[in-house]
Length: 379
Image (cartoon, rainbow, N blue to C red; front, top):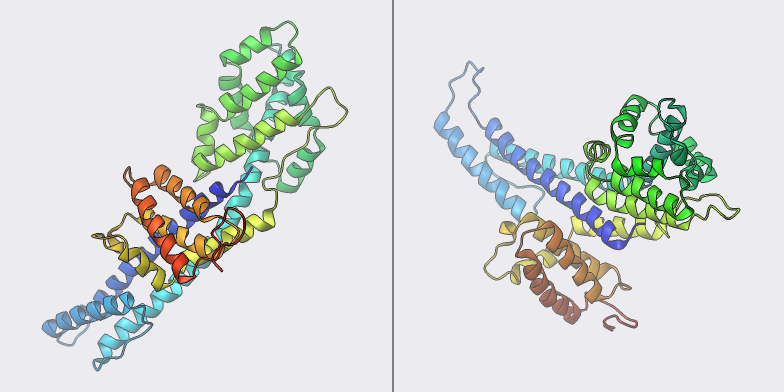
C-alpha cells in the first residue's frame, strides 16, 4: 500500500527529471544564441565575424545574468542582441512550463499505474494456473488445486479490474507460456510442492507467497521483464509486493467470502493532494527559500550541490511550510532517509545538519506554522 515515503520518492523523481529538462532547455538557449549570432554561411553579404563574436559574447552574458536574476526580458541598444536574448528567455519559460505541466500530470498517472501492475502480477498467477490445467505432460494437481490461486481466478474483484483495465497478458501469452515452461516448471520449490501428497492449507498459502515473492517478483526473467517495461520498477515493486502479501494474508479459503483486492491508498484524494502540492511548490520554490539553503551551506554554492541533495532540501522546505499537520521532526527524518537511499554517502549527515538549522529559522520567521500534539506550536 502507498505510504507517504513512497509518494515523496515519486515527487523527488519527478522534480529530478524536471530539473534535467530545465538544464537541457538552458543549454539549448545558449546554443540558439550562438546560432543566431554566428556568420550566415549561405549569405552573399560579407560577414563581420569580429562584430558577431562580440555580439555573441555579450548576448550570452546578458542571457546568463537575466536567467540568474529571474528576469523575463532585457533591453539593449543592439537590436540583434536584444532579439536573440529575449527570444531565448521566452523559449526557456515556455518550454519549462510545458515540462512542469507534463511531469505534474505524469506524476499522478505513474502513481495510479502501480495499482495496474498489482493487478497484472495477480493475473499472471491465474494465467499460470490455466496453463497448468492445459499441460498434459505433467500433473500440476497441487498447483491447480491451490486455494489461493483458485481464489484469484474466482475473484470477482480481480475479474472486474481485468475487464476495466484490460487483460495485461492478452497479447503477451507467448511470453507467459515460455515463463511457465522455463521458469515455473523448472523451479525447485514448485517441483517439491507438486510432489506433496496432500498439501495443507498452510502449505498452499506458503507456496502462494513463494510464487509471488520468489518467482514472479524474485530474481527471475519475469521480474526482469517488469524492470524493462517499468522505468521505476525498483520502487514500484516494493509497493506491489506489499499489496500482494496483504491479498494472500487476508484471504480465508475456509470461509464463505471471495478473495478481495486491496486498495492502493486508504485515501487517494488526500495522497493525490499531497503529491500535487509538494511537486508544485517544490518545482517553484521561492527565491527567499533557495537563498536560505545557500546561506546555510557554508562553503557550498547551491548550484554546486549534488542535484539530488538540492531537490531534497527544496522538497523538505516545501513540506515544512505547506503541511501544518505533519510534524517537523517527521518531515526532516523522511528527507534524511531519502538522502541516505538516493544520494551520496555523506548526504545523510549533510541534509540532517542543514534541515535542522533551516527548520529553526523557518519557525522563527513564522513560515512554519504547526499546532497540535507532537507538532511545533508556532502561532
